[in-house]
Figure 1 (tube, rainbow, N blue to C red):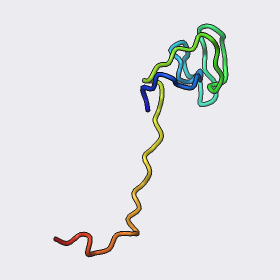
Figure 2 (figure 1 turned 60 degrees about the horizontal axis):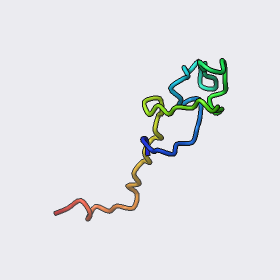
Figure 3 (figure 1 turned 90 degrees about the vertical axis):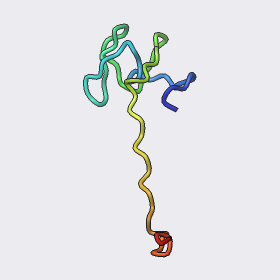
Figure 4 (figure 1 turned 90 degrees about the horizontal axis):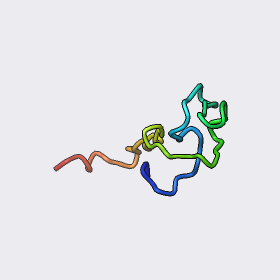
Length: 69
């Protein structure tokens, strides 16, 4: 899902922006913007996107018999 064509526009993922802190970005077109904002000049940069962490496996359902041959 990192390289989807129809990505939701956000300034935090745009090629025209630089992150200032976790909530604001510096846009080359609009200046200081919130990272959730967007404009018509949005160009998706997949390298700026941090994917969500994977879910932790649940080992509580496993028994000792599951690990024997």
